[in-house]
Image 1 (tube, rainbow, N blue to C red):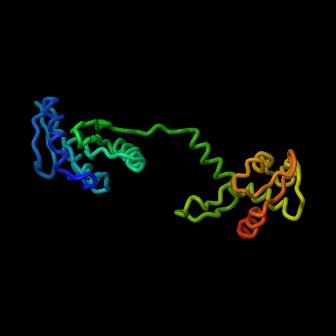
Image 2 (cartoon, rainbow, N blue to C red; image 1 turned 135 degrees about the vertical axis):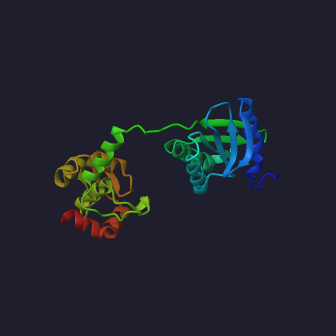
Image 3 (cartoon, rainbow, N blue to C red; image 1 turned 30 degrees about the vertical axis):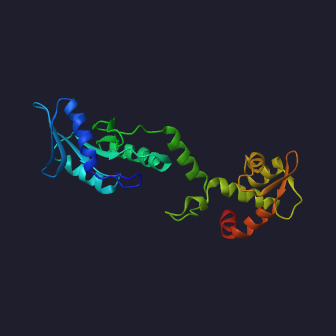
Length: 231
């Protein structure tokens, strides 16, 4: 196989078979609808679905095999680079959520790694994430975003607070953070303007801020959103 050639599913077969045989299974390929079937004594059969990479069809096939046995794995070649690591992280979670096992095969030397075995899975609830979500929901004024919008352009509660501060500073030479906080109701106004996440504010002196040219432009850009905040 050349360095940039896409691996073939058949290249996964021998390493996975050898790994299973090392665990005492009798292994056969292409039995019924399954890529690999492994049997050991009176135990339920193990099925492994092979693919050259993660795909929706791989998980569809694996789910279908769960009608035959609970012991279903998906196997893909181990890749490299950040893109593969991101894909691996997401698909590892998906495999666990679906009750599937996940196998990686390093093709250059046939090393086989089992990342997880098939098992029922229930994700642990994160009270911190739930609280953060509900806090953002409660703080956001109105419903300024359309579902599915590019996340870089979302109107968050933080951006709404920044707009309130910017509106108060419009037409002034600057104001103290405490004054802005009292006038706008944004308790974190001083920290918000000091952090200047959007580049809308300039520090005049300690605790005093004014609008930057970018802030002036933002007021024009977000005119409709400002009107919504004032309604």
